Structure formats: structure tokens, C-alpha cells
Length: 284
Image 1 (cartoon, helix red, strand yellow):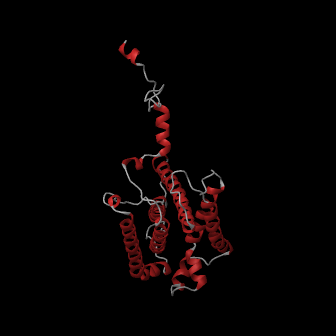
Image 2: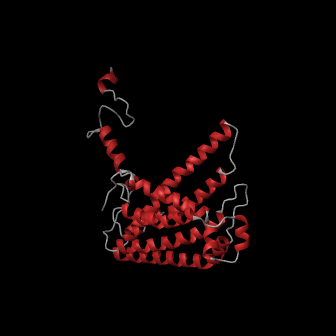
Image 3: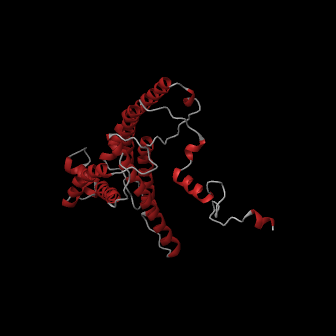
């Protein structure tokens, strides 16, 4: 397994992907009109310009950065070790989500400074924050599924023999697939309608949150179902795991605590980095 090498390229590619995706999403009506989708041409043409050369460059760059990102992504020390082909895509989407969180915080800080320091609030920061938060919430689910970090109750699972654990894993994967199918089946028509008419939020900034979030939910749910199947295949022959409270302790943090406390439980510093007084000095 490839470990993270702290390469700048590892974060530049997700950032380039975000910039390309943001440009494509913001100019979505131009592509809808260019490809002849739906029957809202007059309504869209009255509000939005046609796609230009820069729009097409961004559209072509989007899959390029996606492929490049899946090829260059590296595993961090705390991430799940066993990767397959589809796992690389999920982890790259996870990297994109991490950068989106940074951008979201930047937008919020920018708005707070303008609002309370200069008394000049923006018209777009609140809706942009909501828009980005929606993307983060949905995309993070795919990364959580790949990392097996979603909510799981192991109280009974750990007591089962391995064949019964595999049976439970199979049943849960089937239920995920059924849920994904039902959600796509029931929500496709609404998502398609919102996208083709480019439904917006109805505010001064008026971002296309309904037009983008609804299709994104369906796409990511399908990816989550595929990831669940990939997890089932890769975990099928894995050794059974015993889950304890120690699973929640970060290994690096535990190593730092041991180094601070010392092998015998006493060192020059305690875990708060404060000097430990000797027993003799305390008694004196």
C-alpha cells in the first residue's frame, strides 16, 4: 500500500479539481443549452449566457483532474490500509471534501470579518456556506464508507463466528444496494427536473443549490453502494477483528503520551508537558 509522501501534488490536484468543478457547476446552464437537454431553452437563455471556450476547457479538465487525482492519492497513516481500484476514487473524493471544509471555513471567516469588523456584510457568503456544506455532508459519506468509519455496533457482531459475520455483512450490503436503488428510482425524476430548469435558491445571491444538490445526492448514493460492495469483496477473507475502546485512540497520540510519561510511568514531563516534581521534593 502506498503511504502519503506529503507531496504538494497530492493537494494541488484536488484543488484544481474543485476549481474546475466549481466553474462547470456555476456555468451549468450553458452546458444544458449546448447539449440540448430539456425544454427550458428560452427561460435559460434569458438568464444565462451560452457556454464559451473557457467553459469547455473547464469541462474537459474536470475528468482529467479526476483521473490524475485517483492515480496520485496516497494513504495517510491513520487511514484504512487495504485499497482496491474503486477505493482510490473514494479517497480522492475524501481529499476534495477536506479541502472544501477549508474553503468553507475561509468563507465564513471572511463574512464574519466583513460583517463585524467593517460592517459591510456580503450577499453571497451565507448561501455559499450552505451550498458548500451540502456538498461536504454528501461527499463525506462516500469517504466514511470506504474507511469503515460509519456508525457500526459490534456488541453482537464480535461474538459471531466468521461465517455468520460474513452473512451479516452480505445482508447489510444488500440493504444498502436496495436503499440506493429505491432512492434513485424515486428521486430521479425530481432531480432531473430541478437540474434541467436550473432551479435556484431564490435569494439575492441565488445559487443553484436545488439544481446541484439533488442530483449529487443520487450520484453519491450510487457510489456508496458500489463502495459497500467493494468493501464486502475486500473484507471477505480478512481476519476477524476484535473491537475495544482502544480502537478510538490514535496510535500517534498514544506514542507521544508514552514518550512523555516514560516506560515506567514517570518522566521529566507529564502529559501536559509540565515538569514532574520528584517525590522527595514534594515531601520536603
